Length: 71
Image (tube, rainbow, N blue to C red):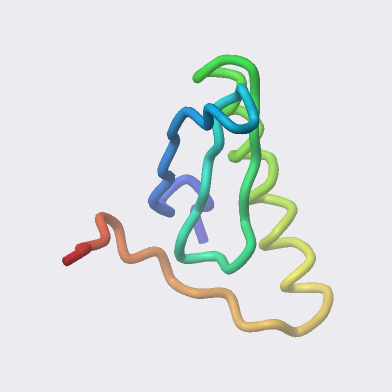
């Protein structure tokens, strides 16, 4: 499964004074960074780790859906 096919949402957090990245299809999968590119790099690592831990613990790994729709 290609970990880079998961949707990633990146936004600036005034409260934390950094960028925050979330992979909404993977519960609890988040990262942060001082720059946009650092944040993207960090979330890619965290997605890989999320998938690896899920495999080790027998947790179901959702298939990437691509772009999510929000109301």
